[in-house]
Image (cartoon, rainbow, N blue to C red):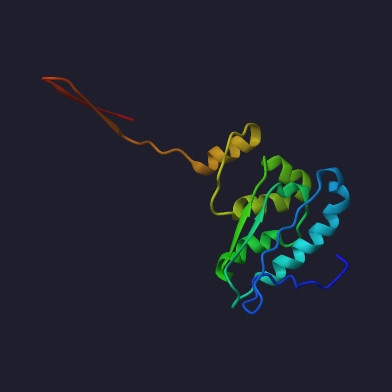
Length: 152
């Protein structure tokens, strides 16, 4: 943070870079403001036309606030930027990003990879996925008989 070793425009076609930024759980509250500032600057620099394809991968999203994240999610694909956000539960987003911004983030993302969740997050995801009635056909065979059954 003290020098000018490189610029933050990681997807610059003339000088591409890989940048990995991490936080220290023991000093999370100390570092998160600075990391949030860096991350906000980085996403503004890379989310532009005529740049290389890039990805923004953020695990444990609620541990750092990134201003402009909702805009990145909404516009990144058209600028060849993939966005992957990891967090445990929607309630973490609401706590750390506020209810309105958390809702925007939840409703703007296109694909979800979900593990086990409970409570409000489970209900929200259930509503989002919806219900589909599918027909299933099963076939049983024995030496002299074939049985077919269909159920929903």
